[in-house]
Image 1 (cartoon, one colour):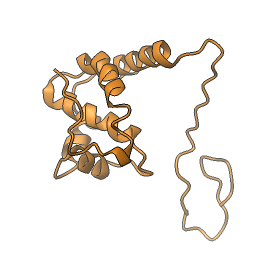
Image 2 (cartoon, rainbow, N blue to C red):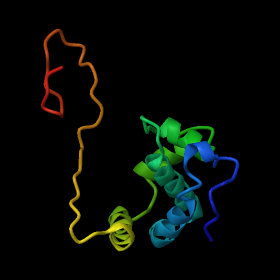
Image 3 (cartoon, rainbow, N blue to C red):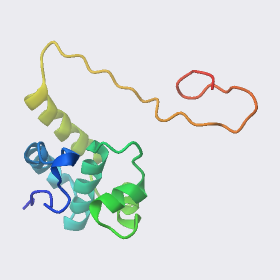
Length: 132
């Protein structure tokens, strides 16, 4: 059902080949949360794009990564497509806990995002709480 990442897109320099088998195993756990094959395909490439080493992860880049001509499919996935986000999150959590978990581990989440200039002439604290 799930094909291995397209060899044309997997280059040793990208580092994807080393973990594509593990990714396929993990994605097999979440594939059922997507309503149909098209949504599943975009969900798969969305997750691969998020796990890539690119600094920015917007719909245009994720669509290009997936081989799409426009970001419409990725935007449809995020805004309109039927899939169970909570079930997807729970399945990924189970997979990570089972395969990477350590009873003494601590998870630290950093949601600061990217710092940007506000265009104002005075420093404004962003989501990081720091002035710019």
